[in-house]
Image 1 (tube, rainbow, N blue to C red):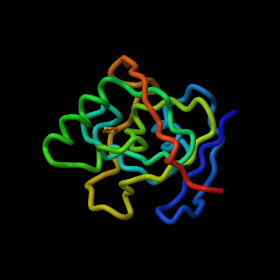
Image 2: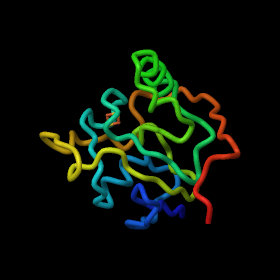
Image 3: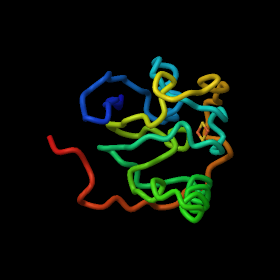
Length: 140
Ligand code: FES
């Protein structure tokens, strides 16, 4: 089964979780008590569940995430214009990956962590190919 390694922004390992292949990443993080805000409950609306994927970047992304990121980039939020930034509610764990969580309940002021999230990606995903540049990734 794939292993998801959660690191902080310095690259230090916080925890490793073993995840059944095909699990939605946000669901895996929540089920393993990882501090990740998910305000909209995994419906690709809020962006609070976003992660940076340092290793194991998926080679596909949902149309929903793509459209939302395009809108945010056009509105002046360049942080969404990065090949390793994903909404964890729009990612399926297929292989080992290393991720850092952008918004944790302990580091950002939120009323709550968020709503429950369904097991499946919501809305039903349409997949687009995703190019991962060679230069991306934490060096061992
Ligand atoms: S975009 Fe809201 S939880 Fe993923």
